[in-house]
Image 1 (cartoon, rainbow over the protein chains, first blue to last red):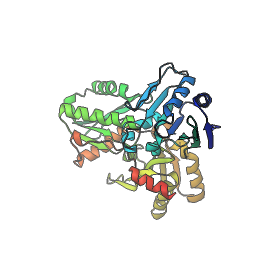
Image 2: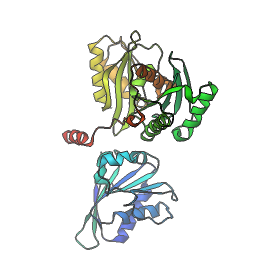
Image 3: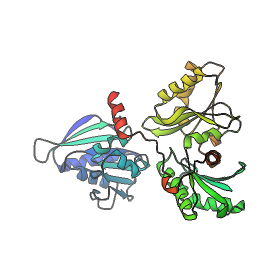
Image 4: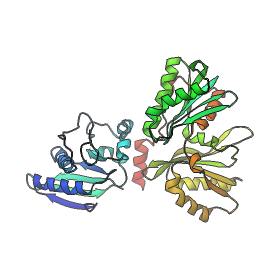
Length: 145
Length: 246
Protein backbone atom coordinates (compact mmCIF):
# COMPACT_ATOMS: atom_id res chain seq x y z
CA UNK A 1 0.00 0.00 0.00
CA UNK A 2 1.27 3.46 -0.86
CA UNK A 3 0.27 4.74 2.56
CA UNK A 4 2.98 2.83 4.31
CA UNK A 5 5.55 4.42 6.56
CA UNK A 6 4.27 7.90 6.51
CA UNK A 7 2.70 10.43 8.75
CA UNK A 8 -0.46 12.18 7.67
CA UNK A 9 -2.20 15.12 9.19
CA UNK A 10 -5.94 14.71 9.05
CA UNK A 11 -7.55 18.09 9.64
CA UNK A 12 -11.16 17.08 10.11
CA UNK A 13 -13.68 14.30 9.66
CA UNK A 14 -14.01 15.08 5.94
CA UNK A 15 -10.38 14.18 5.53
CA UNK A 16 -10.90 11.05 7.61
CA UNK A 17 -13.55 10.08 5.10
CA UNK A 18 -11.28 10.81 2.12
CA UNK A 19 -8.53 8.76 3.71
CA UNK A 20 -10.94 5.89 4.39
CA UNK A 21 -12.13 5.86 0.80
CA UNK A 22 -8.60 5.92 -0.58
CA UNK A 23 -7.55 3.13 1.77
CA UNK A 24 -10.59 1.01 0.88
CA UNK A 25 -9.69 1.40 -2.77
CA UNK A 26 -6.43 -0.45 -2.21
CA UNK A 27 -7.69 -3.10 0.17
CA UNK A 28 -7.48 -6.73 -0.94
CA UNK A 29 -8.83 -9.96 0.52
CA UNK A 30 -6.67 -11.07 3.44
CA UNK A 31 -5.60 -7.57 4.48
CA UNK A 32 -5.44 -6.63 8.12
CA UNK A 33 -5.63 -3.03 9.29
CA UNK A 34 -4.50 -2.47 12.85
CA UNK A 35 -5.75 0.67 14.51
CA UNK A 36 -4.57 2.11 17.77
CA UNK A 37 -5.10 5.39 19.54
CA UNK A 38 -6.75 6.78 22.63
CA UNK A 39 -10.50 6.91 23.17
CA UNK A 40 -12.07 9.51 20.93
CA UNK A 41 -9.37 9.62 18.29
CA UNK A 42 -11.79 8.25 15.72
CA UNK A 43 -10.90 4.60 15.20
CA UNK A 44 -14.52 3.59 14.76
CA UNK A 45 -15.21 6.65 12.58
CA UNK A 46 -12.38 5.68 10.23
CA UNK A 47 -13.67 2.10 10.15
CA UNK A 48 -17.13 3.38 9.17
CA UNK A 49 -15.75 5.24 6.20
CA UNK A 50 -13.68 2.30 5.06
CA UNK A 51 -16.73 0.05 5.38
CA UNK A 52 -18.89 2.48 3.45
CA UNK A 53 -16.33 2.65 0.68
CA UNK A 54 -16.23 -1.15 0.57
CA UNK A 55 -19.95 -1.08 -0.11
CA UNK A 56 -21.10 -2.31 3.31
CA UNK A 57 -24.81 -1.54 3.55
CA UNK A 58 -25.35 -2.14 7.26
CA UNK A 59 -24.62 0.48 9.83
CA UNK A 60 -21.21 -0.07 11.36
CA UNK A 61 -21.29 0.18 15.13
CA UNK A 62 -18.60 -0.33 17.70
CA UNK A 63 -18.04 -4.03 18.45
CA UNK A 64 -16.69 -3.35 21.95
CA UNK A 65 -19.13 -5.78 23.51
CA UNK A 66 -19.16 -8.44 20.83
CA UNK A 67 -15.38 -8.27 20.12
CA UNK A 68 -16.07 -8.80 16.43
CA UNK A 69 -18.82 -7.93 13.96
CA UNK A 70 -19.03 -9.40 10.51
CA UNK A 71 -20.27 -7.47 7.50
CA UNK A 72 -20.82 -9.37 4.29
CA UNK A 73 -22.77 -6.92 2.17
CA UNK A 74 -19.72 -5.19 0.69
CA UNK A 75 -17.38 -6.22 -2.09
CA UNK A 76 -15.25 -8.08 0.48
CA UNK A 77 -16.25 -9.60 3.82
CA UNK A 78 -15.34 -7.14 6.57
CA UNK A 79 -14.49 -8.25 10.09
CA UNK A 80 -14.47 -5.39 12.53
CA UNK A 81 -12.78 -6.11 15.84
CA UNK A 82 -12.55 -4.12 19.01
CA UNK A 83 -10.17 -5.88 21.37
CA UNK A 84 -10.35 -3.29 24.16
CA UNK A 85 -11.85 -5.84 26.56
CA UNK A 86 -9.49 -8.65 25.62
CA UNK A 87 -6.89 -9.45 28.27
CA UNK A 88 -4.15 -10.20 25.79
CA UNK A 89 -2.89 -12.39 23.00
CA UNK A 90 -3.64 -15.70 24.72
CA UNK A 91 -7.33 -14.89 25.13
CA UNK A 92 -7.58 -13.56 21.57
CA UNK A 93 -5.92 -16.69 20.22
CA UNK A 94 -8.33 -18.89 22.17
CA UNK A 95 -11.21 -17.07 20.51
CA UNK A 96 -9.94 -18.18 17.12
CA UNK A 97 -9.00 -14.71 15.92
CA UNK A 98 -6.16 -16.00 13.75
CA UNK A 99 -8.67 -17.75 11.52
CA UNK A 100 -10.02 -14.29 10.68
CA UNK A 101 -6.61 -12.64 10.33
CA UNK A 102 -5.43 -15.27 7.86
CA UNK A 103 -8.80 -15.66 6.17
CA UNK A 104 -10.16 -14.24 2.95
CA UNK A 105 -11.83 -11.12 4.24
CA UNK A 106 -10.62 -7.75 5.46
CA UNK A 107 -9.96 -7.31 9.17
CA UNK A 108 -9.97 -3.96 10.91
CA UNK A 109 -8.80 -4.22 14.50
CA UNK A 110 -9.28 -1.45 17.04
CA UNK A 111 -6.88 -1.35 20.01
CA UNK A 112 -4.68 -3.63 17.98
CA UNK A 113 -1.59 -2.91 20.07
CA UNK A 114 -3.07 -5.17 22.78
CA UNK A 115 -2.68 -8.19 20.51
CA UNK A 116 0.16 -7.05 18.24
CA UNK A 117 1.91 -10.42 18.40
CA UNK A 118 -1.02 -12.13 16.70
CA UNK A 119 -1.22 -9.81 13.72
CA UNK A 120 0.14 -11.07 10.42
CA UNK A 121 3.38 -9.78 8.99
CA UNK A 122 2.43 -7.10 6.48
CA UNK A 123 -0.58 -5.75 8.40
CA UNK A 124 -1.15 -2.04 7.90
CA UNK A 125 -0.69 -0.33 11.26
CA UNK A 126 -2.32 3.04 11.80
CA UNK A 127 -1.60 4.83 15.05
CA UNK A 128 -3.91 7.76 15.58
CA UNK A 129 -2.88 10.63 17.84
CA UNK A 130 -4.42 13.99 18.57
CA UNK A 131 -3.16 16.90 16.50
CA UNK A 132 -2.72 20.53 17.49
CA UNK A 133 -6.25 21.63 16.70
CA UNK A 134 -9.48 20.28 18.07
CA UNK A 135 -10.47 18.15 15.10
CA UNK A 136 -6.99 17.39 13.88
CA UNK A 137 -5.54 13.89 14.01
CA UNK A 138 -2.18 12.52 13.05
CA UNK A 139 -2.08 9.11 11.38
CA UNK A 140 1.24 7.32 11.75
CA UNK A 141 1.14 4.56 9.20
CA UNK A 142 3.53 1.63 9.05
CA UNK A 143 3.73 -1.97 8.06
CA UNK A 144 3.88 -4.76 10.62
CA UNK A 145 7.07 -6.77 10.28
CA UNK B 1 -11.83 -54.01 19.97
CA UNK B 2 -11.28 -50.98 17.78
CA UNK B 3 -9.80 -47.55 18.25
CA UNK B 4 -11.65 -44.80 16.40
CA UNK B 5 -9.26 -42.07 15.23
CA UNK B 6 -9.96 -38.56 13.93
CA UNK B 7 -7.60 -36.36 11.97
CA UNK B 8 -8.88 -32.82 11.48
CA UNK B 9 -5.78 -30.69 11.96
CA UNK B 10 -4.96 -30.47 8.25
CA UNK B 11 -6.79 -29.54 5.06
CA UNK B 12 -8.63 -32.82 4.60
CA UNK B 13 -10.50 -34.48 7.43
CA UNK B 14 -10.09 -38.22 7.77
CA UNK B 15 -11.26 -40.96 10.09
CA UNK B 16 -9.90 -44.43 10.70
CA UNK B 17 -10.61 -47.53 12.75
CA UNK B 18 -7.78 -49.81 13.82
CA UNK B 19 -8.03 -53.16 15.59
CA UNK B 20 -5.57 -54.71 18.02
CA UNK B 21 -3.62 -56.39 15.25
CA UNK B 22 -3.19 -53.12 13.42
CA UNK B 23 -5.75 -53.76 10.66
CA UNK B 24 -6.98 -50.44 9.36
CA UNK B 25 -9.91 -48.92 7.55
CA UNK B 26 -9.95 -45.25 6.64
CA UNK B 27 -11.97 -42.58 4.89
CA UNK B 28 -10.77 -39.16 3.80
CA UNK B 29 -12.86 -36.15 2.86
CA UNK B 30 -12.06 -34.60 -0.48
CA UNK B 31 -13.33 -31.26 0.68
CA UNK B 32 -10.98 -28.67 2.06
CA UNK B 33 -11.54 -27.45 5.62
CA UNK B 34 -15.07 -28.74 5.79
CA UNK B 35 -14.39 -30.89 8.84
CA UNK B 36 -17.40 -29.89 10.87
CA UNK B 37 -19.82 -31.03 8.20
CA UNK B 38 -17.95 -34.05 6.93
CA UNK B 39 -16.48 -35.72 10.01
CA UNK B 40 -19.52 -37.36 11.61
CA UNK B 41 -21.26 -38.58 8.42
CA UNK B 42 -17.93 -39.95 7.22
CA UNK B 43 -17.41 -41.75 10.54
CA UNK B 44 -20.86 -43.28 10.37
CA UNK B 45 -20.25 -44.45 6.81
CA UNK B 46 -16.87 -45.94 7.63
CA UNK B 47 -18.25 -47.90 10.55
CA UNK B 48 -21.33 -49.09 8.67
CA UNK B 49 -19.38 -50.22 5.62
CA UNK B 50 -17.04 -52.23 7.80
CA UNK B 51 -19.64 -53.65 10.14
CA UNK B 52 -18.26 -51.83 13.16
CA UNK B 53 -20.72 -50.73 15.83
CA UNK B 54 -20.24 -48.28 18.66
CA UNK B 55 -19.93 -51.12 21.16
CA UNK B 56 -16.85 -52.36 19.26
CA UNK B 57 -15.06 -49.09 19.93
CA UNK B 58 -13.03 -49.22 23.10
CA UNK B 59 -11.22 -45.94 22.76
CA UNK B 60 -11.47 -42.76 20.72
CA UNK B 61 -8.34 -40.96 19.54
CA UNK B 62 -7.79 -37.64 17.82
CA UNK B 63 -4.86 -35.73 16.50
CA UNK B 64 -4.44 -33.04 19.15
CA UNK B 65 -2.36 -30.61 17.09
CA UNK B 66 -0.49 -28.57 16.18
CA UNK B 67 -2.32 -27.55 13.03
CA UNK B 68 -5.46 -25.68 12.04
CA UNK B 69 -6.96 -23.96 15.09
CA UNK B 70 -10.57 -24.73 14.24
CA UNK B 71 -9.62 -28.16 12.96
CA UNK B 72 -7.94 -29.13 16.21
CA UNK B 73 -10.99 -28.02 18.17
CA UNK B 74 -13.33 -30.02 15.97
CA UNK B 75 -11.29 -33.22 16.31
CA UNK B 76 -10.66 -32.96 20.02
CA UNK B 77 -14.24 -31.92 20.81
CA UNK B 78 -15.69 -34.73 18.70
CA UNK B 79 -13.49 -37.31 20.40
CA UNK B 80 -14.33 -35.94 23.82
CA UNK B 81 -18.06 -35.93 23.11
CA UNK B 82 -18.10 -39.54 21.95
CA UNK B 83 -15.92 -40.66 24.82
CA UNK B 84 -18.20 -38.97 27.31
CA UNK B 85 -21.40 -40.28 25.71
CA UNK B 86 -20.37 -43.93 25.57
CA UNK B 87 -18.07 -43.83 28.56
CA UNK B 88 -14.77 -44.83 26.96
CA UNK B 89 -11.33 -43.25 27.28
CA UNK B 90 -9.57 -40.92 24.83
CA UNK B 91 -6.09 -40.95 23.38
CA UNK B 92 -4.35 -37.70 22.59
CA UNK B 93 -2.19 -38.17 19.52
CA UNK B 94 0.55 -35.63 18.84
CA UNK B 95 0.11 -34.63 15.19
CA UNK B 96 3.81 -34.26 14.37
CA UNK B 97 4.70 -37.72 15.68
CA UNK B 98 1.99 -39.34 13.59
CA UNK B 99 3.90 -38.61 10.37
CA UNK B 100 6.30 -41.38 11.42
CA UNK B 101 3.74 -43.87 10.09
CA UNK B 102 3.03 -42.16 6.77
CA UNK B 103 5.35 -44.21 4.60
CA UNK B 104 5.41 -47.95 5.15
CA UNK B 105 8.95 -49.25 5.69
CA UNK B 106 10.61 -45.85 5.50
CA UNK B 107 13.67 -46.04 7.72
CA UNK B 108 15.04 -42.52 7.58
CA UNK B 109 14.36 -39.32 9.45
CA UNK B 110 10.77 -38.12 9.32
CA UNK B 111 10.58 -34.34 9.09
CA UNK B 112 7.07 -32.87 9.32
CA UNK B 113 6.96 -29.11 8.82
CA UNK B 114 3.66 -27.27 9.20
CA UNK B 115 3.15 -23.62 8.35
CA UNK B 116 2.79 -21.80 11.68
CA UNK B 117 2.62 -18.36 10.00
CA UNK B 118 4.66 -15.33 10.99
CA UNK B 119 7.67 -17.00 9.34
CA UNK B 120 7.62 -20.00 11.62
CA UNK B 121 6.89 -23.68 11.31
CA UNK B 122 5.68 -26.30 13.70
CA UNK B 123 8.14 -29.03 13.16
CA UNK B 124 10.05 -31.89 14.65
CA UNK B 125 12.29 -34.71 13.54
CA UNK B 126 11.34 -38.29 14.30
CA UNK B 127 12.86 -41.68 13.83
CA UNK B 128 10.73 -44.81 13.91
CA UNK B 129 12.83 -47.86 14.73
CA UNK B 130 11.13 -50.54 12.65
CA UNK B 131 12.60 -53.34 14.81
CA UNK B 132 11.49 -52.14 18.21
CA UNK B 133 8.53 -50.05 17.03
CA UNK B 134 9.76 -47.18 19.16
CA UNK B 135 9.73 -43.58 17.93
CA UNK B 136 12.59 -41.31 18.86
CA UNK B 137 12.00 -37.57 18.96
CA UNK B 138 15.28 -36.55 17.40
CA UNK B 139 14.40 -32.85 17.27
CA UNK B 140 11.58 -32.02 19.72
CA UNK B 141 8.27 -30.91 18.22
CA UNK B 142 7.86 -27.15 18.51
CA UNK B 143 7.67 -23.79 16.78
CA UNK B 144 10.83 -22.93 14.88
CA UNK B 145 12.16 -20.58 12.26
CA UNK B 146 13.07 -22.65 9.20
CA UNK B 147 16.74 -21.78 9.49
CA UNK B 148 16.86 -22.83 13.12
CA UNK B 149 15.04 -26.06 12.31
CA UNK B 150 17.48 -26.97 9.54
CA UNK B 151 20.42 -26.30 11.85
CA UNK B 152 19.02 -28.69 14.44
CA UNK B 153 18.35 -31.29 11.77
CA UNK B 154 21.83 -30.87 10.39
CA UNK B 155 23.40 -31.46 13.80
CA UNK B 156 21.51 -34.76 14.06
CA UNK B 157 22.45 -35.92 10.59
CA UNK B 158 26.13 -35.26 11.09
CA UNK B 159 26.09 -36.70 14.59
CA UNK B 160 24.60 -40.03 13.52
CA UNK B 161 24.57 -42.26 10.53
CA UNK B 162 21.27 -41.20 9.00
CA UNK B 163 21.25 -41.36 5.25
CA UNK B 164 17.62 -40.67 4.38
CA UNK B 165 15.41 -37.70 5.15
CA UNK B 166 11.83 -37.14 4.14
CA UNK B 167 9.84 -33.94 4.55
CA UNK B 168 6.10 -33.84 5.12
CA UNK B 169 3.46 -31.19 5.73
CA UNK B 170 2.13 -27.99 4.22
CA UNK B 171 5.37 -26.20 5.09
CA UNK B 172 6.93 -27.83 2.04
CA UNK B 173 5.29 -25.47 -0.41
CA UNK B 174 6.70 -22.49 1.47
CA UNK B 175 10.16 -23.79 2.25
CA UNK B 176 11.02 -26.28 -0.49
CA UNK B 177 13.48 -23.90 -2.16
CA UNK B 178 15.21 -23.12 1.12
CA UNK B 179 15.51 -26.82 1.93
CA UNK B 180 16.91 -27.67 -1.49
CA UNK B 181 19.41 -24.84 -1.15
CA UNK B 182 20.39 -26.09 2.31
CA UNK B 183 20.83 -29.57 0.90
CA UNK B 184 23.16 -28.23 -1.79
CA UNK B 185 25.27 -26.20 0.62
CA UNK B 186 25.29 -28.33 3.77
CA UNK B 187 24.60 -31.99 3.06
CA UNK B 188 26.90 -34.67 1.79
CA UNK B 189 25.94 -36.30 -1.49
CA UNK B 190 25.34 -39.66 0.17
CA UNK B 191 22.33 -38.30 2.06
CA UNK B 192 19.07 -38.76 0.27
CA UNK B 193 16.53 -36.01 0.76
CA UNK B 194 12.96 -36.38 -0.42
CA UNK B 195 9.70 -34.51 -0.24
CA UNK B 196 6.75 -36.78 0.35
CA UNK B 197 4.48 -37.12 -2.65
CA UNK B 198 1.51 -34.78 -2.68
CA UNK B 199 -0.99 -37.38 -1.45
CA UNK B 200 1.26 -38.41 1.46
CA UNK B 201 2.18 -34.92 2.61
CA UNK B 202 -0.80 -34.07 4.72
CA UNK B 203 -2.05 -35.42 8.02
CA UNK B 204 -3.80 -38.80 7.86
CA UNK B 205 -6.14 -40.56 10.27
CA UNK B 206 -4.53 -43.93 9.45
CA UNK B 207 -1.23 -42.69 10.88
CA UNK B 208 -3.03 -41.17 13.85
CA UNK B 209 -4.70 -44.56 14.42
CA UNK B 210 -1.37 -46.42 14.27
CA UNK B 211 0.18 -44.11 16.82
CA UNK B 212 -2.99 -44.30 18.91
CA UNK B 213 -2.71 -48.09 19.00
CA UNK B 214 0.88 -47.85 20.20
CA UNK B 215 -0.13 -45.33 22.90
CA UNK B 216 -3.08 -47.54 23.84
CA UNK B 217 -0.78 -50.52 24.36
CA UNK B 218 1.36 -48.31 26.58
CA UNK B 219 -1.69 -47.45 28.68
CA UNK B 220 -1.77 -43.77 27.66
CA UNK B 221 -5.57 -43.49 27.68
CA UNK B 222 -6.97 -40.40 29.35
CA UNK B 223 -10.35 -39.38 30.62
CA UNK B 224 -12.18 -37.14 28.14
CA UNK B 225 -11.89 -34.20 30.53
CA UNK B 226 -8.13 -34.39 30.37
CA UNK B 227 -7.94 -34.44 26.60
CA UNK B 228 -6.86 -30.93 25.58
CA UNK B 229 -5.72 -29.39 22.28
CA UNK B 230 -2.01 -28.91 21.67
CA UNK B 231 -1.67 -25.65 19.73
CA UNK B 232 2.08 -25.51 20.36
CA UNK B 233 2.04 -21.76 20.57
CA UNK B 234 4.88 -20.28 22.53
CA UNK B 235 3.68 -18.42 25.62
CA UNK B 236 3.36 -14.69 24.98
CA UNK B 237 6.04 -13.75 27.48
CA UNK B 238 8.54 -16.03 25.80
CA UNK B 239 7.82 -14.66 22.35
CA UNK B 240 8.07 -11.05 23.53
CA UNK B 241 11.44 -11.83 25.04
CA UNK B 242 12.66 -13.32 21.76
CA UNK B 243 11.31 -10.45 19.70
CA UNK B 244 13.06 -8.03 22.02
CA UNK B 245 16.35 -9.83 21.44
CA UNK B 246 16.16 -9.62 17.66
